Image (tube, rainbow, N blue to C red; front, top):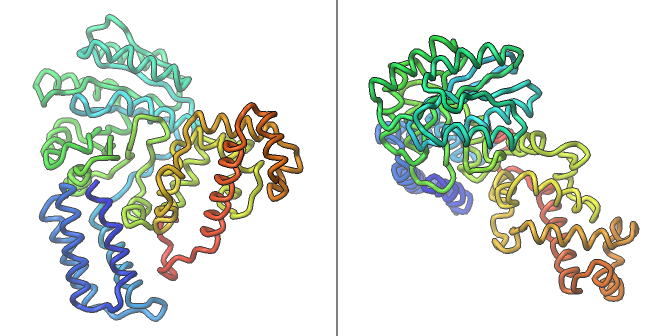
Length: 432
């Protein structure tokens, strides 16, 4: 996506032989280009780029920074200021109402947000109040069952307000109640009235507007209309991955002064996270987001599966790899995991080396099940004769055993590299 090109800005600064007015102007133009392509509001683009240029050319470099680090720090701070705020939601008894246009991913988001709070220890349930879309009831029901979340809906119900009233009575013992409302094709009066009535009955603690990242410049108009109708407390941006239009939704939040609550980047439950401006901008600039990584580990992986500290230690055995392979099955593609590590860590690795399919994970585990305890703890002793024995015992080929050992060495070297990696911006805790 267009915002991804912001990583090139940091590379240009760090690789530049001199830091002067020419470099600053080039960097500002690159940032403007990336933000405009991503559909960030032009006025906001000008504010951000003007602030970066003014500070970069006028501020003195602090003693703890060199000139390159000083420019990166300014870019980071002004982008974060331009992105806007996140929303902190206390882990307490609450009701959440989701609204948005049809096709924004609202129903899927209802289940994801329920799973998010369930993983935080809250007793959570979901409600479908969408009586307009025939498949809405079944879709949310199936998603809720998949995540083992209590579901309330009335399959043949026609009165959305009454359904919400009944849900409140039936689910009063739950900590978190999340209500999915009908998606609007546009802001039709009949649906607006229904949305207003549901809000009156539900008395939600939070009213979230779900925006598709691909909506572009229309995001501001839609956000304003929903805000005027019921008062929006936060925005959830969906489908952020793989689109150049995500900046429009970010602009909308900033323009109306509504914080961004969550961002979704895919269909899976793990492709959903609380919006943290610092971590988000760090990731855009290729600086990683360790905080998001550790939260992802905490949410989807149990302590028995993987110790978060062990994932980043730098020295581990094949037994640790076994646990990591199991954990990755829950966390998602390894490429997305490495995207959360600082300064493009792992970016030069070929895509096929990062690819870990379900079938390959299954084979690797079978191979390791055929190894002795000594081999798992000390892979260096695995010579050609041991490879042949392991292959026969696991029903695989010697080549596949070698592939596992190669993967192990790659992971080991990457972790060592990360352990030694020093952030080029001293004193600036980016992404933590």
